[in-house]
Image 1 (cartoon, helix red, strand yellow):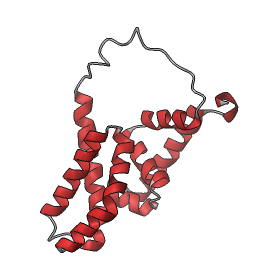
Image 2: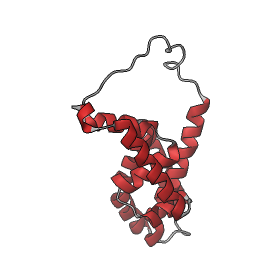
Image 3: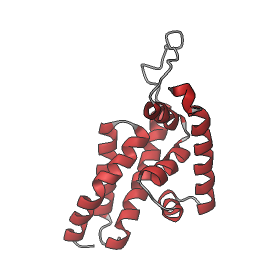
Image 4: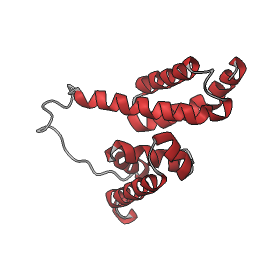
Length: 161
């Protein structure tokens, strides 16, 4: 890959990669860092990666860096979460988009990632399998399970209105 192809790749894929990571981890600064790390890794391997494979390489790298960051975050106990058990409460929401976003946030990381790639970014099952390293059949299973969970979580439209 040449420098001009790399720059074109940055222009074409940076926003989509950022949105994908942001939707999964919901932290703008961490998402920016992970996108930057993904492009840095592409730059370090620019001679081995062809321009045609750059998008797949970026999303695969971004996905793996996001999973690594999620694992690191799980090990840390956030100050807000410590001791909030008696102060928390459930609120009833009437906004479908907000309710759906909450449901997506409750999905396991793998299911959330494949649903985001499929429904928000428009990737095919085969492309998602390539990005995540899962088999195509497993991608379909994860998407199905995530959609079933979201359907149950959101419930009927009548309860939201």
